[in-house]
Amino acid sequence: MTDDAIWAALAEEFQPDVDAALAEEEGPVPVVAVVGRPNVGKSTLVNRIIGRRQAVVEDKPGVTRDRVSYDAVWAGRKFMVVDTGGWEPDAKGRAAAIAGQAEIAMRTADVIILVVDAIVGATDVDEAAAKVLQRGKKPVLLVANKIDDQRQEPEASGLWSLGLGEPFPVSALHGRGSGDLLDEIMKLMPEVPEDFGPKEGGPRRVALVGRPNVGKSSLLNQLSKDMRAVVDDVAGTTVDPVDSLVDIDGETWHLVDTAGLRRRVAQASGTEYYASLRTQGAIEAAEVAVVLLDASQAISEQDQRVISQVVESGRALVIAYNKWDLVDEERHYYLEREIEREMRRVAWAPRINISAMTGRAVAKLAREIRVALAGWEQRVSTGELNQWMAALIAAHPHPIRGGKAPRILFATQVDIRPPRFILFTSGKLDPQYVRYVERRLREDFGFVGSPISIQVKAREKRGKPAKK
Image (cartoon, rainbow, N blue to C red; front, side):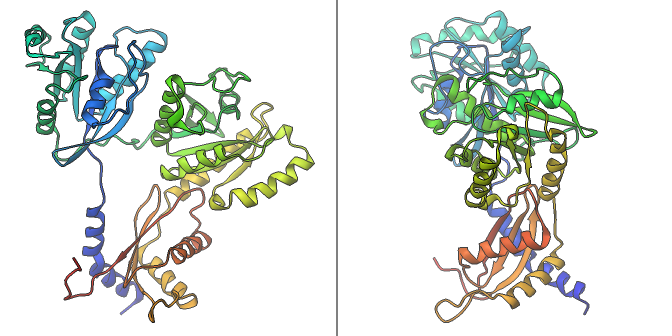
């Protein structure tokens, strides 16, 4: 048999194991969008659905400005709840941006909940929202909120006029009726959820992230040759993500300027809290993140935290050292030492030295982004990967533990964006050896600019039942 035939036969033998490993993982889950006009109790209802106080609630309209997603479970089924800002027709300025985010949630959700204040009754805004939802093809549940006891239930009957079917009387604050609502949501959820992730085609999405005041907005303005974002010496000027289509090096890119990520998001409140949540959402919606560091200052714990957030989100990564015009010879020397010491774990990420203020090297940023995206989408064939793995093991076998060493029986790359591998073994591998495999993968295949995931699956011996 030829080598190709051998690897093909081996791949066929392990295919059931690959399928089983992938089946154990959580795929996309259904999405429930909670929408409605400002201050009707959407975030309170979200907290009730997810079973914890996570969405920020204040007794004033407009606290929630963007789509914020939360994981939830009911009756053993997992789904995602999206809290949105208040929706208003013909909104202007910031209110228009908030309404736009709510409309995106409505388009991408599998089930939509329209929340109405039953005590106030149906307003013109509620009627406009109902008309939009009637034209859509998504299942809609009408929630009559603030029905705190049975005596108030007649208030909900007036909402039949919205044309969305029977209103569900609920008290999001006290939990009354929330169980029945969740049961109905389960009935409307599809078995296969709609794909709500980044869509193929169109300009590649790039998130500009970093701690406050590293020059993200200045870079966006420099690239766009326009004042797209407000720039100020005061840290934290940017609150909402600023989206722009920008031409760099002959290609159109979708850039998103984000708020500076704080050191401890859990301790932030109000605007800072939501800015951090929106920045995380921008990272997850992007394909590649450009993390800006202030080259004139020491690499901080905040910088490391931002980089970790990008890596954990599985996005391609480019590191841009900004304010290079402020770096003298002494600072350059110490910066190189800091990079060697602090940035070793992301040595695979492309580096570029820029100055958003003067425009130094910003046009070259597109080249590094392309490199990172290529690594993010790189794939190694099963035959080539296993031939490489056999040579690697022969040159550097796994250390012997307890009188024997586990063997890597088969390796396969199961996904890209980011690259993901499964190693089927005869036993558990040392974490240090897995890190060695990853390092050698990068040395021999590249994967520049992309995190790599390696999963180890110890294969049960044929004919022996699994241990309880």
